[in-house]
Amino acid sequence: MSFPKKGKFFPKENGYGGNDRQQSEHGFADEIAAALRRSLGDSRAGAKVVASWTGANEKTVKNWFAGRYGPSGNHLVSLARHSDEVLGTFLALAGRQDLMVAVKLAAAEHAIEELLVAVRQLGADDGQGGPSVSSG
Image 1 (cartoon, rainbow, N blue to C red):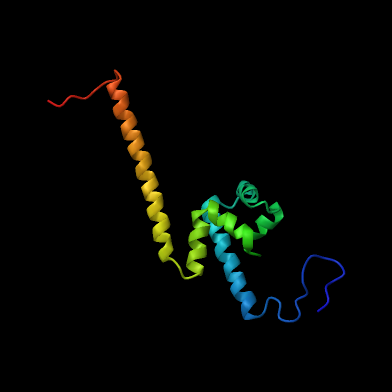
Image 2 (tube, one colour; image 1 turned 30 degrees about the vertical axis):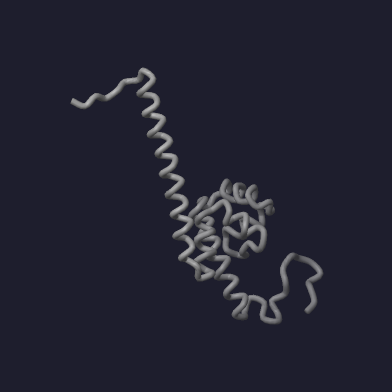
């Protein structure tokens, strides 16, 4: 297979874009693109955020958002680290949706901890001369 003298694209011969492997990769790219749009919207600001998360070029990130290409390797790990939508999509594509239950449970535990801290802070504020509620 020879590469073109100019341009940034592989030739379409030898099944590029037409075999099953490319079809599944395009499905992967579409799914990740949908997850990115759910997580960050479809704006230039979202692309900039993702570029800062991953260190990828902004044009590359825009291709991810468009579903032309999907992230690989370290970029996918960075996306999953920052976006629960991408993590959930990745786990679903891997057939491991059950692991999202653990992620959601951890998030719920964290939210409950934050709520308890806020309630305790309110109780401490009441004890320091703030208005108190008496039961009658």
